[in-house]
Image (tube, rainbow, N blue to C red; front, side):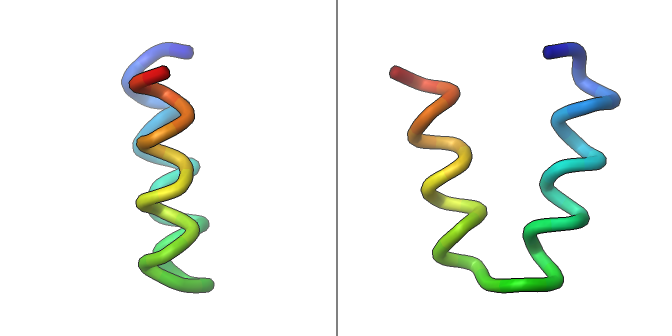
Length: 30
């Protein structure tokens, strides 16, 4: 994923919950 796609996903997930944002970043790290 490029940075633009990542930022779009973060903005979308931020609207739902911080927990899902953390889970998203954990998937990126692994």
